[in-house]
Image (cartoon, rainbow, N blue to C red; front, side, top):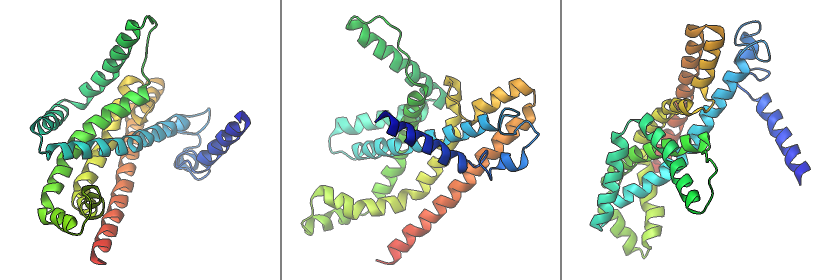
Length: 267
């Protein structure tokens, strides 16, 4: 079994190297960076920055589904008939929309460590506990993203006529099937522009994880700056990478938007 995992790991490394947009065979740094400070390999910082790009993308992609799920649940809570649930959901969005993202990251990163340490200490374990930086960054960004996502989804929910729910009930559909078959398709179409803006903000907010030691674009370029003293050049490279991510995201969001409109028109 270990041999299988080793083979799969080697295959993944080979595939990721081939399709690496920066240091792959046709990567930007491989084609235009040989002999410069962004060359790939031991002679430059291309490999390190390519790793930072991968980490940034992975953090954003891992945060998105968690944030969407929490935001959806919070949006449902804001519409609950139970007053205490509505109040709790409103407090949640107010707190995490009001706190700076960096402060939320510190609270999650250090707060979870303190909570786990206290729980283990009560069980007699006195060793030091350190939470994984990736997990902490993902959770903190998920919390912030979900708070804004909840408001976007709440507005989308309110834009759907109540008659849609009544129509589902008249057809004999359960509440969950009405939500899945009637409400959710409309909700996605209405909320998509707002969620697209939140995704773009999330890509930028991933830069905060460099503060807790995660090797994202900003941290890797910062290390390169300290080693080479080429601050303007490397931060310009970081700007270019974030702009490329934004352009690719805009193209993807535009495609999704056109697809949803075609799907709506074909009904």
